[in-house]
Length: 356
Image (cartoon, rainbow, N blue to C red; front, side):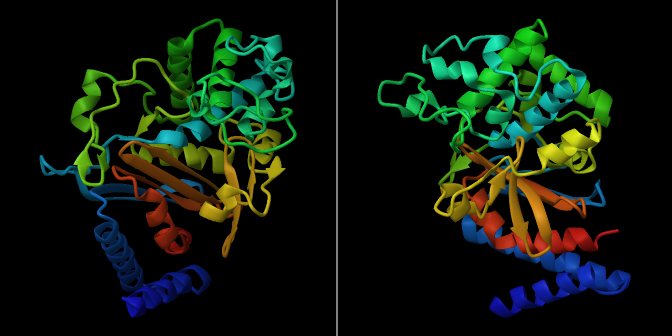
């Protein structure tokens, strides 16, 4: 197995760094990528996976593996929908930054000037800005239910540190909906319509509906099928249902700055806060900093933006090279996505760079 992995790495790295290659060499590299993914899926007992590769800012390849529903023996298809979990955040962030460009909200204007947070009395909440939320500097915990009393609080002075927070994103959604004179359901409709107009693709719904059922993958935890998450109101931080090619459309837009001003694209992918050496996200996932809605990391191929997502029975990941505009998105119906990403990230980046 070690020799196969070494061969694969050498093959794809040669494709990336060397002269133009013959079709048979590219096919051999593709076969090696498929073999690597399938082997890692068996090792990690991942039922199904959808993969989209991005090259030069466009979707260059889509591959599917395994089962969307193992019991029904329904294979993953290109239009299979997965819970993307926290990959919801970069998609929402893209929409937020479009509203900043339009002047609907300002990155450094306190959200309380639009809508005071309805669930907290701490005066520090009045200083939280969209920039702080998008770079996880709001001071809010990830979720209030992690607190012993179940109440929302602020852990530090907003803007003074890093703490990954879904609560911050949900507050930003409430304030943005208020600024747009709508509710969360209306915000979802506006987001999807705006992305279709800007990108000519639909990222997908943030809420469950019966017509999703035939295309929705079943989530698995330790081999046990999970019930559908029949969420009725959008959670911008966690509830996006999407396919790998749909989500890759969003990542491609971020890389190319489609629908964003040049300054906003640059800000989104520039460090807003550098993670400490002992930060959990640095130790566990190799992330170095946070931009506006995306994490930032250095790879052997250059600086990349990245993000993962974990829901019950689903995990997802993307890593994309900022300057080369190449990378990948994968969605799985398993809890083992982070382990899978660690095993295949370098090879996928190299192969994405080699595609044409």
